[in-house]
Length: 210
Image (tube, rainbow, N blue to C red):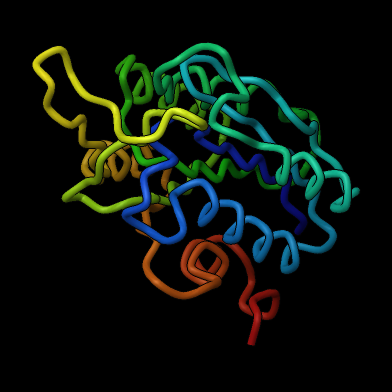
């Protein structure tokens, strides 16, 4: 049967780290574009988050509009700094029509630094509603320096002048996925990571790219 898919994208400043090329956010954008090409017939929505979460595109079959919202995402999109995975999952959970007979899937795309530590509780609430969370980790566990921002040049530093490194937190992301019966995958070089790895577990095989 068809699925309702909420794509939840991290737009915090750490998503500008270039430990995956060209940077984490652009890699996420490309993965999502590949995903949209495959899930024809599913209703798909888009949530963006950093220290707060906002629905950029409600569940829709208009993939053109979805792509337009996707291409507009920038790290300064949301004025609240941080990475609140709990708020992101809660926003996505509340966006589903619980009366519909479709499968409900959250695709959470993030580097996984849950600054507010609310992700686990939000995942448990999603699981109670029969929502599966598939988490797609963008970045490298060894990390990379966070750019200071557009027009500023250089990288962010702490109060002691040391470079701030953003590291992919795979352990926490894996737990969030497992709470809901979903799975975690890390982005590696090459296209269709998101589509082939995550969808293989949640969708019929005939809907995957050959």
